[in-house]
Image (cartoon, rainbow, N blue to C red; front, side, top):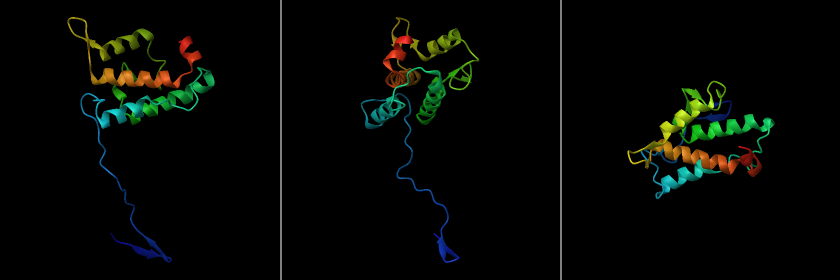
Length: 142
């Protein structure tokens, strides 16, 4: 590494140090492993210290926090309806469209048993986050 002196200050080029390479889960989340548990804890923890009460003034803040959580946790595939991001384009589709997308996330075999998919796991993680992030009063309204 080189350094130079400018007006008595030593300068060095900007270097980014990484403690370990990014480890990304491939395939199913295996919650019996350390990596799987870290994913679960990261995604499902409440968005804020104070639960969202459903007030209009807090809606934008909650949606932004949830969008960031989904992006940081790589849950993007479950956050779209007809190609629209649910956090920013929520007026461009209706409840029926969202239900159709949800059925794609949860697949069933010929006997009717749910097939576990990564998207189904991610949906459950997101739902757990939402339930832990909303007040009981708001959940009762929904």
